[in-house]
Image: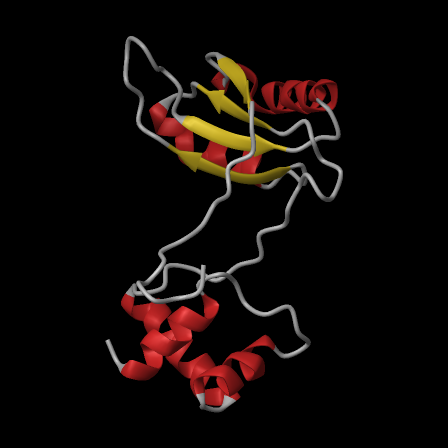
Length: 160
C-alpha cells in the first residue's frame, strides 16, 4: 500500500469530515490536493481496499427509535426479485440475501425497517408482507435491545 493511500485511510477511517468539501479537508490533512485524494480513493475502491463510501445516518438521532430487522423466508429462485422490491421501499435502509440454516433458521432475506416506534415498524412489515404476497413463506422482526457502534477497518496508529 502506498504511503499516501495509508494516510488517506487513516484520515478517513472514522468517517469523512463534515465540511463543505470533505476531500479537500482530507487532502490538507495528508499533504496532498483534492483531485489526488479523490483519485486515490477511487483507485482503492476499484482494487477492493475500500469496499464502499456512503453516508450512514444515525436513525436514533433522527427520531427513528423502533428500528427492526425484518427477516423473511422467500423462495430461493425469487430472492433477487423480492430483495429488489423490498429494498426499494422508502422505509427500508438496506436489504440483503443470507443463506438459510435449516431447521433452525429458514430466513434468507433481511430488510432493516425504520419507524418512530415498534408499532410503526410492525405496520411497515405488514406492507412488506402484502407486497411479497405468496413469496412470503414466513417472517419475523428482530428489534435491537441496545445500540452497538458500527465501525469499519481501523489501521494501527490511525484515528479511532
